[in-house]
Image: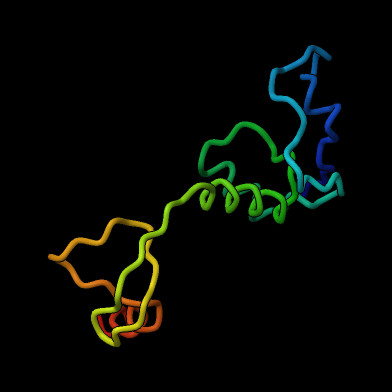
Length: 112
């Protein structure tokens, strides 16, 4: 198990040679706290062929992933085909397939 520390803004702005790397400052949310690169994470990184060790703790990595996934996502109004409740979906609804609210979708998914 390897114990790591999140890189500070200055460390991220400069590569290992001390030259600027063009990445700029870390995005908000990088905590700078020490974190443990667990054996399970090391196995996962090796299995995927990742060469670099993480520079963010798990929480900061998850926050960064989630922020980029939900940013600027347009939501469309729809009506649930089962219960008739208004809902929002991340795609333009078409009339050829039913749209379900979260509760009805979970119910239909459990029936598969």
